Length: 187
Length: 247
Image (tube, rainbow over all chains, first blue to last red):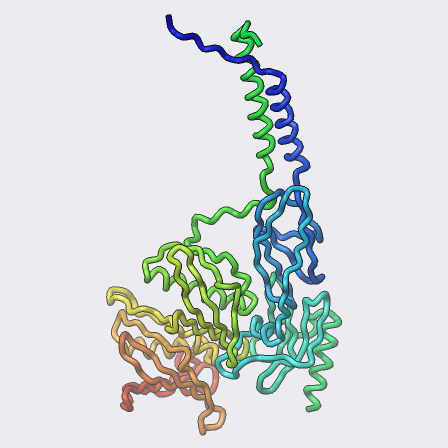
């Protein structure tokens, strides 16, 4: 006679365990988040896994995220950050200030004919997205740089093929450029 | 507990298992926030932290750096790679040149990069070195047309596109069909001649494997005169070519 197999009937403990697991999974699905709070300069932008976010504190599913900080005044940082259930991580990276020479380099290039560029008499405008100053080396000339789409570009310069129409600049930037141009003309 | 009704017992187990599967599936419907973008199938080389070098150079130059590095990798039979800017670090030397390292985890190799971004009156060009070697075009086979490299560097020091074309035509006439004609950007030196309003640009040019010294004299934006020397011997003098006079 072949052996018979018996299937045990699920008892109360099994049923309750399954119910608890189900409730827990559904609960975590809808409420299982951690938070990352950013402590950053106002002009900085945050990118999480290549997605730009704007909140100061953000709700994230637990896991590891690539966080990139970009800023007109600071060098970008790129770090992995772990997020756990129901915990708030404060993210305050060590940001390094960009020297003015690095900002001019990013916008105009650096070497070759005249060596390392630099800027003096600098003034910042519009949440640090405009920078006006005298750019050298050599005969320093009034220049306005604009931070747009994560990149410094030349918004005004008398040097060669750059835009040099002050009427296209924001008012405060145009005033600063005009002041530098007048001062430059006197010298 | 007695196994009084096997079918009912099996049904109960099935219900419990189904409930678990459904709840787990619900849980997985949002397993992450901001998922990483999928790697593009069209892009063989990807930089994981591009912003580190993008902070330091115009986007046009960044694209040139990637392009030259990809060509370098292809020549070394590395057809795809994830590239990282090592230590998230770029340094600038006293002359303004940029130095950093690319690291490829796949082959555990580090490549020393150096980039000089030249700017002449708003036009930028770049000299890109990989492991100390300036990246120029490799010699090509003779079946194709003449290949010109780095002539945009001449535009960066004040030559118009008309003048650059005049120089290319002159060099093409001097070289054989299918030659590789490469301007060496780091050799370009602009200056002024003794003749009022006349400018001079000197540079070296490699035609296939041979190195020549070139001198371009010009006054406006439509005229040029190219003089080519090798080992102190003058091999070519085009005279003044002016497209506005002889279109």
